[in-house]
Image (cartoon, rainbow, N blue to C red; front, side):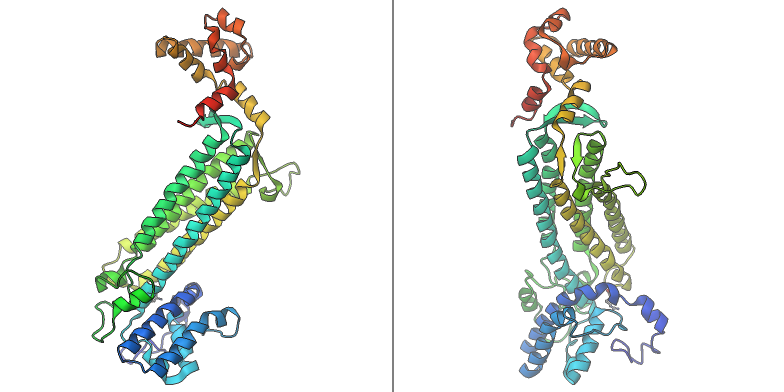
Length: 435
Ligand code: ARG
């Protein structure tokens, strides 16, 4: 009879049902967290007099060494268990004999899996923070190397107004990711309660001090309410949302790069570009397209988690088992994209000549010319119409605003003092000057 089965449970589980329902292949990565939680629980059982010092020592030693022994291939956990929690317990039973039967005293897999996942989420928040820092550092380096290059800011995917490249990178990468960093602090804030001690649904009558266990595991306190502690996954939802928002921000930046590369304003380094299996001339923005696509995957995981959790009553339900594949996917995906955007930022460069040509061809100085007229006392709508007409007339002759001389300005009834407003480089510098 498997460990988590009694006569009351019924016959042995059908092997197909066991194989289909087991989460071991996915939750085996919770092994380090499971062992950490169990060590804290062993200490609580010792303090409660429910384990002797010798028994606690045997369990603690076996649990502390298990993750690295599994990593080094010295121990193979049984695969035919319902999950990693049962696999560890059944391995301990084989390894240590009778004492292993005392480990689960005053505990349920419901509070066990909840504490394992909370510990995992805490590590995930720290890893995502490191990933964000990596992108922010790469963005700062990009600004150091290319930040002063004038380039077009786009609206509606068309050349709009000249800016310096640092305004683009700050707007598309740095500001959004700094907000995401603050969002992760909120996620960490939701990870202050240890679920251990909540038992299956209503704690335990045994004298186990959940507050001490919580402190040993680095939580601020134990479960406030056992029904909530085993059933809620708010920190998982918040983390999945943070991953989705990071994905969205990275995806938007990636979309910028794809477009700027296609317009010839950004050059992709060979280290991050894809090729075509047929067309020998291609250099494709694969890294950025994949990151853009990942944003959709993050949204899928978040939506699946919301649906999964929203349809349940309070307390634990087996449905919750599905939360792990989703949150693991969200965090792995977000971390991968963060690492790739940090790499991508180090392998893209602006093409200054092409950027300048785009600013000239796109009449990107039109708004500055208009505002120059306004500054000299012309009402805005009048200046707006005048510059619009000028652009239209020039374009009909294949010419652009930036090519006008002082004499030509005067011929069009414009003050020659506006000449400085026709230089895209000067305009970009003024637009990007710190305010
Ligand atoms: N594998 C389960 C999960 O991941 C562990 C909890 C099982 N609890 C239970 N009462 N069956 O959610």
